[in-house]
Amino acid sequence: MTLPATGRAWHLTARPHGWPAPECFALREEPVRPPEEGEITVRNLHLSVDPYMRGRMNDVKSYVPPFRLDEPMDGGAVGEVLASRAPGFTAGDHVLHGLGWREYATLPARHATAVSAEAAPLTAYLGVLGMPGLTAWAGLLEAAAFRRGDAVFVSGAAGAVGGLAGQIARLKGASRVVGSAGSDDKVRLLTEEYGFNAAFNYRSGPVREQLRAAAPDGIDVYFDNVGGDHLEAAIGALRTHGRIAVCGMIAQYNATEPPAAPRNLALVIGKRLRIQGFLVNDHRELRPAFVEQVGGWLRSGELRYRETVVKGIGHAADAFLGLLRGDNTGKMIVTLDDGPEGPDGSAHG
Image 1 (tube, one colour):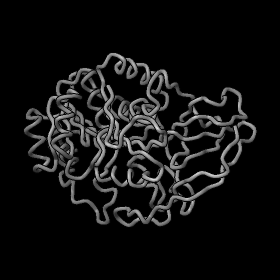
Image 2 (image 1 turned 90 degrees about the vertical axis):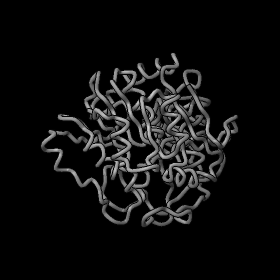
Image 3 (image 1 turned 180 degrees about the vertical axis):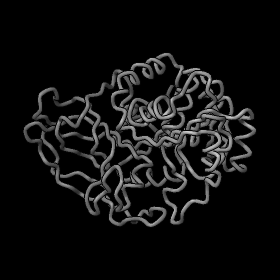
């Protein structure tokens, strides 16, 4: 087929100080380059926006390079191959790749992974069967060294990673699973649909007191997506030899001053706690086992997930800003497809 001459892509135009503002982003026309030998050109159907992208907007050294100003941003995407000059890929194939935030992408085929729309909804490869799902799996089972019978606390548990981490703990034999979330509706989701034993709205009162009520006998594992007062509360609630897997600290991503908490780090000594940060890219070898087990739980209905779907490339920056505010339940997806998804989020199970 004939490729379009141009497509739209989001650029970062200014580095935010504190919370990003809409004027930090611009949607611009970019030429669509035909594929060269070993490359494919993809029409993106669904884009991922993720909390880690906030860190890439700062010009600081980190585990992933910062976004460049006035150039297309990137991130996870699923799309349809329009043209291929690479063996193993033909027009019409669906692929997962890393050049999101745009309508069209030309990339080396070795950086794309074939996915099946028959095996799972395409959006699932950006969430439950993608990077967030593997993050939950690796963080709980490897970084936190989860063991059957552990009591587990997950912060930000209605998000893409947290909701899966709590359910994996439940399905792997946790004695108790507790989650925090930012609204009463999300709390009900955790207990009524995801099977958490208890959950609380962190906006309703001090996290330390609510966690103590939800887990009166303490916890063995804390899966940290938030940091700050959640981390302080978890340190207080952890039993001897407890483990903390630090996935993210979204509470301070937009902070301009150092966080006040945790103020009780000295407890790490007497309790002999272990705090382990981790990156999902260090655990790629776990992916086959992860896909096999989580895929089976999805087919059986034992594991459920949610997506918040925002329609249209023009709303990608809004979706990202909404993610930072906690507007999403489950994975935040920007869909460019004209499918049946609505803008208010879709439930899957």
